[in-house]
Image (cartoon, rainbow, N blue to C red; front, side, top):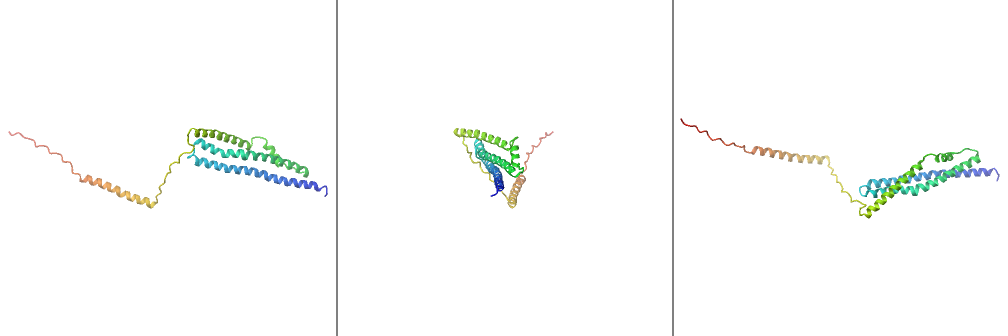
Amino acid sequence: MANGALPNLGLEAYKLEYQLAAGRYENIYKAIWQIFSYLAAVTGVLVTFGSAYLQTNFLLALASFPLFFWYLSTFLPMNRYGDFCLKRLAAVEADINGLSGSNIQHYKDFQDKRSKGFRVRGTVHILGLVLGLVFVVNGYKSVWAWCSGIPLFREKPPETKLISLSADELKKLMQQSAPAGQATQEAKSAKSINQTPTVRPKAPPLKTNAN
């Protein structure tokens, strides 16, 4: 094998690694935010339907747990793996540039910009800290309430039954109520007519003195 073929094989190997690492890096953060969206939906369901059945502290502890669990079990380890993948991509770019004389610095520039300023990870760390505090504080209050005899589950609120009437049924009800009202009015008027008028007593005749 000619010596000139070795750099070409090395360059092809670096290009293959670069492609695989770039795809892996993209899939890492797709998976992170996809899992976040699923657990955020679970949190929304708990808050929406649990507010009527769960004690307040118990509800807040349950609602904060899915996203706090995501922060600990998904974001921290996968973000660490993403950082390692980004460093390797920047190193592969340097190796490819050395072998081919090109100037590929896409991930190298992104790595430099990511290390400066306040990035998305800073916001996520603050969110994780807040969720952890909410979970710990309300979890402690829930345990205290349970030990004090306060029920964590509320009774089911009474169901409100809605009565629906069609246009025809409403018309029939109005027709039935109208004659009843008319009969009452007629009875009142007949009663007032049949009443005998009050007769005032006649005054006694005046006596006149005969002359």
